[in-house]
Amino acid sequence: MGAEKEYKQEQKAEEVDYVQVIESKSFRKLMRDRKKFIVPLTIFFLVFYFLLPILTSYTTFLNTPAIGDISWVWLFAIAQFVMTWVLCTIYVKKAASFDKQADQIIEEMERGDNQ
Image (cartoon, rainbow, N blue to C red; front, side):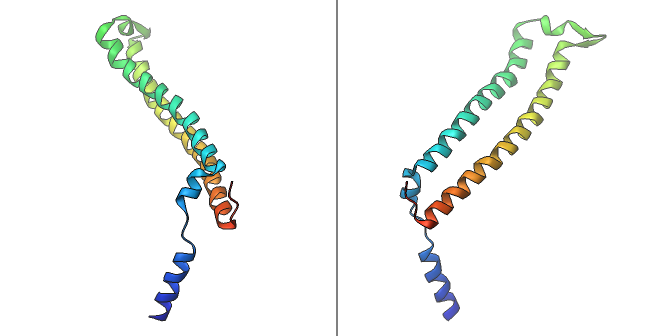
């Protein structure tokens, strides 16, 4: 029982004031950086993804041969798989930098650096 009580006291001492975190300059910078990265990537993904069904529904130029019997529509479809893997790789690498920024924010809050 004593260990449990001590744990609860430590937990309360380590609670974070989330309002203070949200109002900090470093948190606002993190959110701004994430938005500048994610929004253009999402727009690119959605445009590229929906372009294939739109072009195949309303045009015929993707049906022309590109390499032998392989038409442009097949190359576009394969490019979507490549695009997905590339965007995932880019995001994972960029997310590591966001994680570092988040860790710095946590350290600042633990030290009491209120910006």
